[in-house]
Structures are given as structure tokens and as C-alpha cells.
Image (cartoon, rainbow, N blue to C red; front, side, top):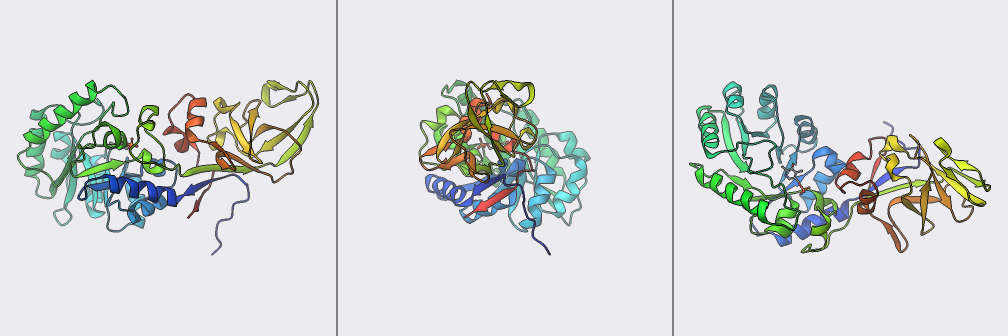
Length: 371
Ligand SMILES: *Cc1c(COP(=O)(O)O)cnc(C)c1O
């Protein structure tokens, strides 16, 4: 067996100790009997689902949540016993496999339940999703909820294990829409004839700042497990510190002197005003470093320098203060000496949210784990 070797010096470094510490800090913040559901959908928000799940479980998470059947099956290969919940849609064709693999599904349609066939040797656990204002998936009225509940009760091999909802504005300062959703959810809970094992409503923003009393039986911990705040508003009032786990590094693979009037990259959009050194790094938009990030600063030798010209598919160029050697380390996200480039800074430059940044760093960039 050969271990996979990476030749291109571009890599994401994932600090698992930061993830563990973020989960431990959360655990200390929660009521003692409240479960932590580690949300590791989308390959652990781009950090690597298996390694993140391992770290989260070690630090106290007792359940994993993903978005799709494929993500759940991938986790099940590494974790034989832990509860895995699929938060999104599962087709009826997946129900049998879900039951065999002890994967918990989200349900919100009586028709789905009427059509589903599960083998009674392998009961299927489900969480009912109620839509209290997200407008995405979930039953929208108490009647619909009771209908669904009755349909599930008719099927021997189906088990209502949980009930949950999701908030649309938990990361915003204004409370009004959030409060409407909370009140609706509480009515849904009361409408059920039996209380399921796990009721959960809170994502990161809800439990950390919006309403820490809404912990119910479990909380769904996503973005801050990775050390990122759900919004700029939440960032200013976090109840404990979180540490960003994701760094992105590369190296100079070419260094050249650009004379006054010479240009760099497609479209020759950047022209040297006077002689300057330019470095090339092997990362481009096919790695998820989208062209909108042109102008974003990176770190070299502890200093900030900008990406110049258009970002290519596989490479981009940076302005250098001096002629560094090939192989000099370049930090695109993370720390060098006193300087730091955060994911939030990238998000601002790309005019998006921090959630999107690690997710769009493509699989071509290997994830390397530091302890
Ligand atoms: C992604 C997701 C979460 C996690 O949200 P964070 O803001 O990352 O904590 C929780 N619940 C549902 C239903 C989700 O889809």
C-alpha cells in the first residue's frame, strides 16, 4: 500500500484541536443533559466530514447531522454506532437502506409515509420537520402535523424519534420574526399526542445568542464548531471564544521581475507602474479561489501582499515586496507571525457569507489535519 502523496504545495490545514475546543466550549455552555448534534453536512463544511465528526464526538457530540443520504452513508462507513440524522429530503427508495444502516430520516409528508415500505426487522427512525417560517421543508399546520403523526403510527416499523424546526433569522438582531417562529414551534410541540425522544430547534446562532433557553433535548451545532460566527452581529456578542479551524497554504512556484508598463494575467488587467517582483502560486478558481478574490491579500514572510491581475483556473499571481525564493510559503487563509487573513475577510471580499468559503474550496485541495 502506498500512501497518497501530494506533490502540488497547495493544501488546506485543518486544526482539529480548534474544533474540539469549540465543541468543549459549547458543551460547558449547555445544560448538562442537552445533546450536541454535530452538523457535518457538505463534507464537514469543507473541512472533511470524517475527521470533523471524530473530533466532535471526542469533545462531546453524541449525534451527527448531514444533508443527504450519500453523506449519511459515507459517515456510517466510519462510525458504526452513532446516531446520524439526514436533515434534508430522502427519497422513498432510500428508506430501506436507511433502516438497515440505522440512519434517521427527516419526514414531512403523509404521502411519503403512505408509500414507504420498511422491513419490520429493521425499524426506521424519523424526525418530523415542522416549517415555522423558513418556507423550505416541513409541515406548516398542526392539522398537517397530526395527520402525518397518525400515518407514521400506522406503520409498525416507523418510529417517531424526534421533532424539529429551523429558524430563518436567528443570526439577526431583530427578534420579531424569530419570536413568531418560536411561538409556532411551541404550539406544534404541544399539539403532539406523545413527546418524541428528541426535540431540537437551535442552530448555532439560536443557542449562542438568540435564546440559549431554546436548547430542548439537543442543539444542532454547525458553523461555530468550525470557529466561525454565524453573522457579523453574532460575532460581536458570542458567549465564548471560538477558533477558526481552516487555513489555506501554498508556495511560490515562480518569481519574476516585471518592468514598468508590463502586465500580468488574462486580459492584461494589471500593469506595473514601476519595476516590481511578481510571484506565482499554484491555486486558482478551479480550487475554489473564485475570480472575485482578485485583490485579496495573502501573507508571505509575515507581510500582506495582494493578488494581482485575474485569477486563472489553476494559478494566480501576487505582488512581492522583494525577490523571494521559489518555495517560500504563502498563507492565503490563516496566520503568519502577527498577521492573519480570516475566512470572514475572504467572505467580505467575495461579497458572500463565511459559510460559503470553506465549502467552495474544491476537492482538488487536499485537507491535511494538524493536531
Ligand atoms: C446547516 C443546518 C444547521 C447548522 O446551522 P449553523 O448555522 O451552521 O449552526 C442546523 N440545522 C439545519 C436544519 C441545517 O440545515
